Length: 362
Image (cartoon, rainbow, N blue to C red; front, side):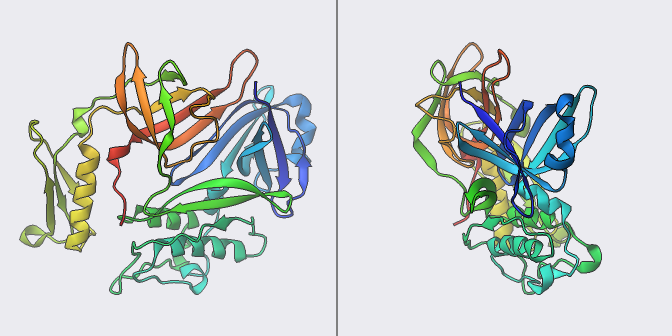
């Protein structure tokens, strides 16, 4: 049975506060284009720890499995609830949702016209950590992309009088058509935990032929395969900027021997014909999928040991039971881990999406 260890650290100095925090009912994970999350409970007999070792908004929390660092982030809540103290934490990216651009255009780094959104993400973190008492020692990958943020006519800007949330700026960059993707990891740096923002373009992760998840081998449980024709379409009509006859329009369609089903995609701010056509193609690709596995519970197994996969990886999934008959490539969009508790074994859950739902920048 694997052993788990939870430690806390001062967010600014990196000083170790608790070398083995006695948490129970722990649940933590990570996702694609989102900060990770963590939940656990501290017994009331350890309430004396709260003032110095579990200080919300000023404390880092790390989780190690068999001495391997799996998760790190910031504690945001620790309040008594009956006979326990629930503790809630968020991954490194959650910090940006507590910070604002108070100088405008990230301290003069913008506005951005035809800028690489990867650089904008790096500028967000540089701006946040350059302010007094704001340095978490988070690093951002030097990834570059050919996606564009803002135009000469309409630059992307963040005005100080609106005090935009820095986390929303990152969301804007990953929402750009063909833009980058991100997730976060935690590593040791000079004896303290440090966050790393992994940027991927044209995608995060890769197709993994060395890993597999199969019923009867390393899949413990699964959500039944979903077949939903309400979301299905082989024809997507994208409607962009303009009104009436002058409104920009792009249609992407295929014939595949099935009854024709259509979907209208409203993107009223899109003025570029090429970008509108790309949006229609991406939407059509995503909607032309029937039969999807959204979640599986897996076992720690040589076919795919815990920690061997990454957010964004494509993995082969083969499910055969009374509800499911599925064999195909799925993309890992999130994972969640519940350590052993009493008689309950370790539970590992992967959140999945059909790999062919995704198209990537080029």
